[in-house]
Length: 262
Image (cartoon, rainbow, N blue to C red; front, side, top):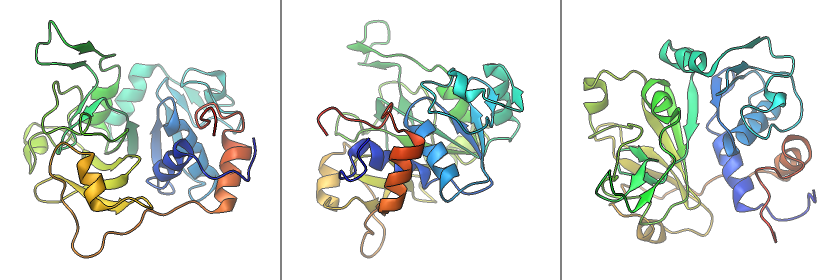
């Protein structure tokens, strides 16, 4: 893969996801960009993290980019391989610090929908894939990072179906339902990085990507975004060295980070 090309949107997303990971954390890894991000973090700023793959493999030795959480590279010299249900049990028992989820819809409290689009569950406009392990992760993992494309029909006032609970109805409503952990702590899109205001638990702009204004970000959102006081920071961009590591050592075949024509 060429290393002198400008960074593409998928590579930028992978980098931003990786920056949510701190050293020594236990990271729950799902298929796609979360795998790229976790491996990138381990090769750069967080060398002591432990990778827990959704399929149950624990912290395999360095190898090629897995094509999914069930790929053989997730098992390579792994000290332990469990069943998927046990990996969810790790979350429930507090042995996972951070996990990542995608979404079809997300609301201002970080509730996400991967079930259906429409108002009638039995006759939806679009039937989606459903939960898989999404609800387990969102309900049980200590900290969740949500990742998806931003548009007004995806960032909505109220999701059509709550597949995976975030901060539920805001404030302390998540904890009042008996769910452990902190819920979603960040949302990453192609426009911005968001966090959640501590009291209301409403989504708030944390940083804007280069060239994106708050007004443009708001136009691509179906609910009112909160903004921090003062000037909104510009999202950090990766150094040429990190881009080189991403392309040469993490995903050299572009399994998850290549875009045709770019």
